Image 1 (cartoon, rainbow, N blue to C red):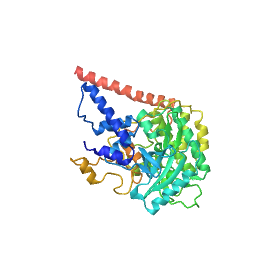
Image 2 (cartoon, rainbow, N blue to C red; image 1 turned 90 degrees about the horizontal axis):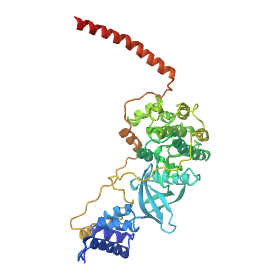
Image 3 (cartoon, rainbow, N blue to C red; image 1 turned 30 degrees about the horizontal axis):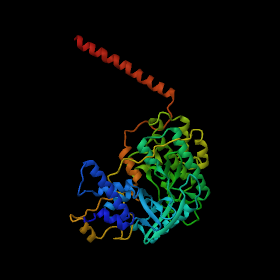
Image 4 (spheres, rainbow, N blue to C red; image 1 turned 30 degrees about the vertical axis):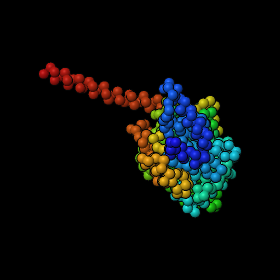
Length: 454
């Protein structure tokens, strides 16, 4: 009898796959091979890749689980939740897709990394759970549950079947004015609700806005939220938090100078990104971006989107006023002003991006709990075992992932600055250019004629 491979052994130990399901998959592959070769094959060779694909096809395991099992991973549960996929990296930890073993409800599960499970980090994590549990609005991601599995602490939230706005735009390009207005209007409504509950988000950005195929938008990641009432204890008070591309000037000058209009500036930056596909200040370090937020204006949106009207540009400018007193004062007003441009978006292409070369991370567990013992690996795989590379994700301490992405894709020659362009100014510029160019060309012609006739 042939030895079980690492994949087969891991699949059975993990309890994701029963022996009957494994045998059914092997039989299906053997039948397919015999039918293809047209003769009776005594010894059928089935690779782990083929077996994994068959089990995924049969609906027994997910693609994420298949990849993890091939690497010898055996633990896929966090408390009563079975991890079925990896969503990405949040501001405070990795985010997985999971399903409740009894209820069958699919959720997003945010996990605090083991190397960050200090008393301070756990306290902040519990604070986030309580903050998000207070929120109940259709444009905010809802919290369902929380708990811990040994030393692993996790938060369970609503799973939004789509993708974040940053990835959506990177995949399909900038949004139309109607689409961008529709998405940001919804977020403004959710943000207004949060502000009414006494919370300031502090990290509004495209990566924290989730968009479904039908155009529904939800604001996620309340982990950096602060209180409107500065008397309430806030462990992040006095610290700059957020992402460099979307930081309000007052937050850069004085991290304690936080108010609801701080979120409106960041939302304005996000609206700018939505309709241009560019962050307001592309390229440079986080420090340089902060300086530009303080002292410069973004490039004119029409440089990247010819359909943007001057009235719409004024709305973005009002949201991104550097003086908080001159900025739009409420998210409710933002939603109201966006409404004339907003449209009911019938469909967004939120399909998966092209596959990444990095392997998604395994479920965080205590050392040695998530893979086969070395002796088992050696027994089932005589040639040895090599761990697959796991994703290296930049966190938002130091250079953020958003900053790294903007540095890699948004560097371009400076276009025109953000100022309205009048027809009179264009005519004056053209006239001045011609007034200089015509006499110069006549003089050059006279000189060339003189030289040729000499």
